[in-house]
Image (cartoon, rainbow, N blue to C red; front, side):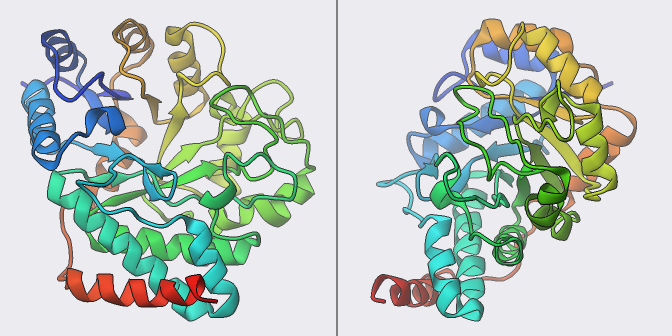
Length: 341
């Protein structure tokens, strides 16, 4: 009888699994794994690493995540993989021709999915649906698809569709909105002091329009208008709002709980995120001591969370027919209009 999956997604230290990692992952049975640049040296090596993960867990169907947005957030880089443009390029094209920008965003995502699928990566942590405001920290910056909720939602939808058509599951982020943040949650806890009316009028809107996507990632942001004490990831109130007002019904994962925005020991962080309503917690840095502590704070995936986790992966590994060379040429031509403008 197979062991139950734990409500956690883990990273790993290097380009292959150590004996300690193999034993630990086999025992804990994480729901999935996330890859970073430190784990990706060549296509052959990545395929071998994913094979190791599947063997260690005894599961052929295993969510393998990566952050491959394009621009500065890309774990797969040249010379082994193409460089993909940041969202800002599609934003600039949209201002001149919305239809061409939407098409280019879709094609670019389909090309990203082609690269990921070839390696066995099944989940991309994109699209970013945050709406940045003037003066905000550039942690979002050129990762945003625009500065209006409608435009962001249209282009984020195109990206998600391109990924799905390429057999890759999308992760909507950072719900309920990171665009107003004046700090980088990797380094400290950002506070957003907008009113509920302001958040409803802008920040929440793209997420409401994309609430049918299969997965989403929380924002490590404090919104005093919503919860004076707890960041979104740890807030019963905000996760209830994500489910009820925004209407997101898919798998909800925390952002990385090793970020400096969070405090407390790792067992506590994991336990509190799940208690607040996250379906799974994400721990990225591959530090074994931290992972062992996180594992103590997570339970088996069960009930509605398990059902959402299973439903989210139904499109993985099922790409539609695709002419890669034609798509690459068309996308390049569309983006050239932005470069040459």
